[in-house]
Length: 502
Image (cartoon, rainbow, N blue to C red; front, side, top):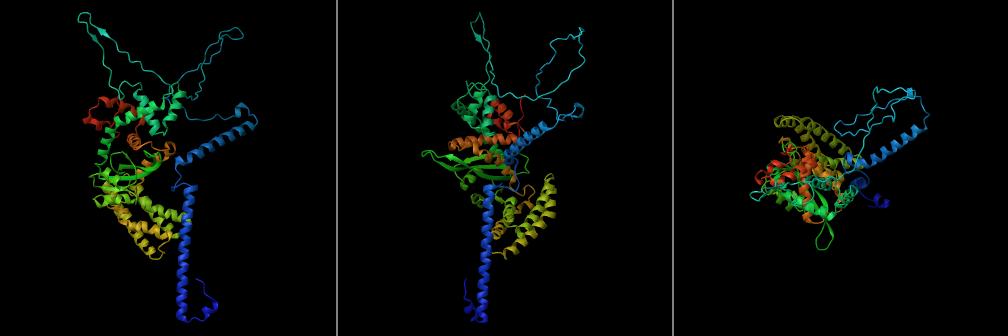
């Protein structure tokens, strides 16, 4: 708003107050707009050049740290080479951790070619020095020869042979160990089949990827009843986590790529069952969540995605994620060092400190501590947010951070009155993070069926990990037992109930 100085001098007191008010309003609007733009700019820079979480994860640092470690080792070696030679007595013996005792040992003997001394006397062994070096041999194929003896009766002219146990791939050449290796490499280590074909080639037998794909398809179909049973058990819990992540999928017909979604569901962090079930769907529509949950009615911990809203209208109880609310203020503080954001972060930190203390407590004690300590902090924080919201412009970044919490406050603080509810959705986000990290290797899912098969196998692999099992050992044993295992007892093979056969 521009006003001529001469025209301004001719205004009376009332008109001057009106002009001043308009100028102040415009100034506040400009400040709010600048704050919003600064916030968006800082957020975009973080998304492009920095980590998307408050802390650097070990997975994100790995590549850089490997290079740094390599450079440091090279520099240390060069420094060592430049140092003058020291007398043997002055050299310090390196201290290193002994190699694990369970590793197999192969002895390499170093003995003199002759045990006769130069003086003609016979040498006598008085001891030995042992130095261990760590060796590695890439995967080596072996062959199991199943020999079935034929026994004939000369009198009745009959032949008897011992039966061969049923196999997950009837008359196939792979053992369950090889099948488990292919599945773990593809769905846990994110190695596509064409890479596995090259790896097997270096081991002496290049198995065509088409053959590997057939094995994967067959195993996925045989494992599906186990995944269905796992889903049934997950839905028996009153508290569930839910989250989703995008995955590219090849659309049939036109050969184009479109965005599909991998949904993840897990029992609450305080539930006894450790499991996760992935559900691969063509879109992010809320109907997929409703189809998975079916008749389930409990407390669902999730973010503010609108796709869950219809489920809440049908009897599912919404439990918010406090970490998402905190993240809004964290982004605001990173953008412009907002004092409002700093105060909010301090209060969230106090609540999370209490949550760390109640993790190991029983439900009644957890409820008591939350009611006594967390409730006053959150009530005061809510009143403070309401007052701050009245003082900030409606289109500012600060108002958006405040509105996210205020509009969902009941869901965000529901954990205070329910000891089985965690404060946030980090439990399922940690279960879905390995999937997100592997997307760079997948390129895309070849079809809806391929995505569903991947989600089924990954459900078993991640659930096995959550229960402390080696995914390879788990799948190898389960694939060996599935062909003869009774369908009515399929629950015995679930990761949280599995016991390895001797």
